[in-house]
Image (cartoon, rainbow, N blue to C red; front, side, top):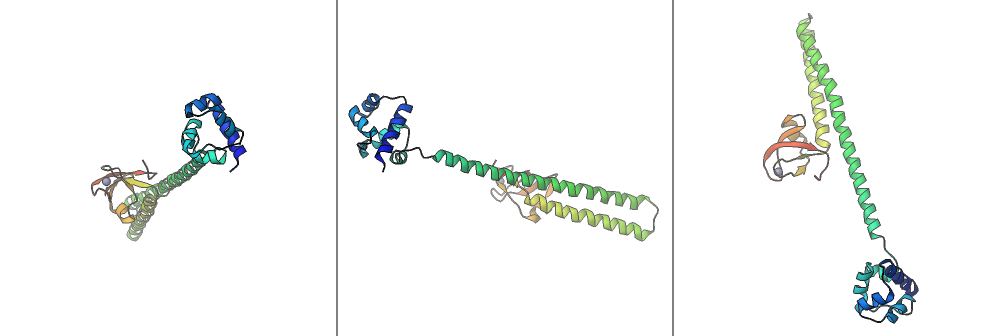
Amino acid sequence: MDQIKIGKFIATRRKEQGMTQAVLAEKLGISDRAISKWENGKSMPDSGIMLELCDLLRINVNELLSGERIMAEAYDKLAEENLLAMRREVEEKNRQMLKMEYLIAFPAVIAGLIMVILASFIEMPIWLRIALIVFALLLIFTVAFIAVGIEQKAGYYECQNCHHRYVPTYWQVNLAMHMGRTRYMKCPECGKRSWQKKVLTKEG
Ligand SMILES: [Zn+2]
């Protein structure tokens, strides 16, 4: 332990808290000569008084013994920021995926419908009519399956009853009644069925 450093640290923190040596001494119930000795690095506060001293200087014992502020807050904040950034990234990825779902599904469904309309109203050999309709249905079904896969993987569904957020299986999503992306499914947490909304994050 570096007593000189600790002493200077005590002096700095004391001044930052707007206290004279006399005021600090009075609060601790000791002589101001004792404080002067700490601050000059000639002695250390004894352990019986350390907690109270740290409290008055608004530092922790670890910091007192290191003779400096330990940037725990800065560290925590950084970690928090990193977490948030990661969360935003996942959210953004999910958002992109859901956008892609529409970009794939919408044109495919329109194309399929146009084929069915053409096959129904335009003069053509019967085999071509059937082929067109079969192709259109295959197209719509294939794309719907792909789209559901994207929807299932991107983000979570939220139970309307208990607000639990979870990722259902592909078939749960695929077989569920739905209005847009809101699907009628059973919650694995509370077991109730409800219209579950698509949400991008795990936490509400
Ligand atoms: Zn629930």
